[in-house]
Image 1 (cartoon, rainbow, N blue to C red):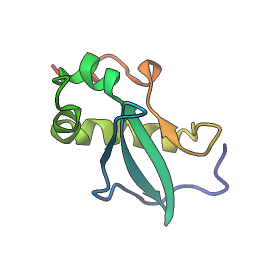
Image 2: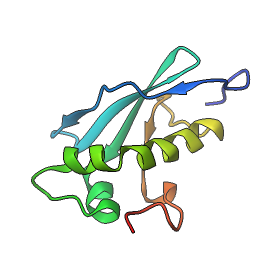
Image 3: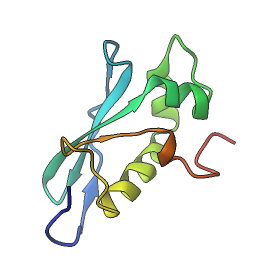
Image 4: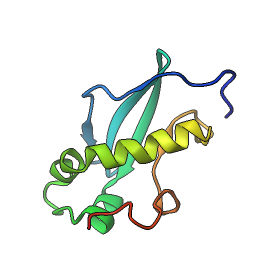
Length: 100
């Protein structure tokens, strides 16, 4: 889904919540005043950020800035999902995007 004009401001308010049914941490990006729903699957947190299976939210909070950078990259590249949101996947991670 392409955005119509250049993006000037991306914010990430503290809206993170766990969704155990979908096995994701969900959060919002606000792009020039428009909310975009974002999600990072637990499996990404386990694989890239050494999350404990008992507490994926802790891993998200610990590595939130890196997750936000990856989401921001997708927004700036106008790579939104069909529903207008962003659900991170393995293909979003470049070398160096994981916990050292």
